[in-house]
Image 1 (cartoon, rainbow, N blue to C red):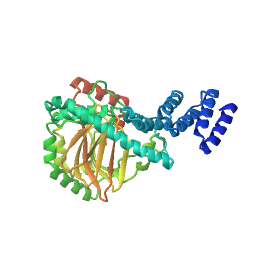
Image 2: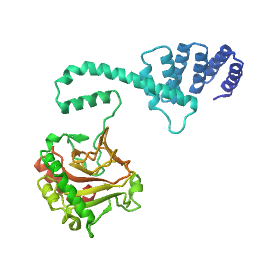
Image 3: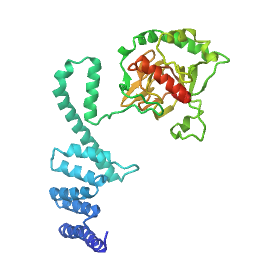
Image 4: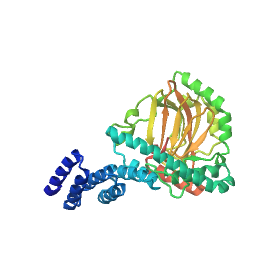
Length: 386
């Protein structure tokens, strides 16, 4: 801010404290002319103009400020509140723009109160838009099956920005052209009902292996401290998230597998990837009470992951992309772990899920062979496991 503008602002502040808002407004206009690149002066002018009962003059000043600083949170908040005050239909969207730029950290009480009101106004605006969209789509939606209806609902939710698109982002191996789904439909996996029907059998073998003296239970996350994997630091070598491996990177873990013959026999009927040093994989995943698994992505999008929940205390949840599900004992699902996902056990009890990998159904036989050859030749096979 140049000296001339600073002096004018000082005079404007004194006039404002004396309740001489007309003079304060005139002085701020001069200051804005003296320093046309300072959005702060224009926001002061907007505030004084609003106090004078001139919302459209205030809105013009805010728009000039936003032309200089388009993402300024205070300016966006002021714009939304002024639009609300004059009953402009753009107010709902304007609140959304302001909320999107909310800074990290604590806000002053006055701004926090205004933000809370804005969030309520924005939510009401979204509800109105959603109702209009749903009414317009109702006839088409009625002709859709359950799977199509779910995609249509997500399309609507994405359009409203209540959810956002998530994509496959594997850390190591990305095969192009595969369908991206957070949770894949059951119809693609005709064996899933057989796995669910065997829940009691698998749970019984879990109990047997957990009680065995020589069973191997290891932390799920294990890596050298120097590796750049900060997101995993709280869980690295931490028994709060542990695994009892039956098959690990293509190797049978005999100490555990010998207690689970019927579970492994069931897996034999499933088309798991066979990749030297990488897969198949199958394990019991144990998540301790009060433990969170942070958002992360897997390493290889050519294979999917199946969960069969076995021990599920109330409230345990699992999110993939924009969809969050509660685990339910005996209800299996297949998901793409190269799409961002996370989990939480908020209960006071252990949660256990049986997990195994399988080929992505879009891959042809020749493509599967090529994937297996590349991963095996690359020498990072262990990175492609679960």
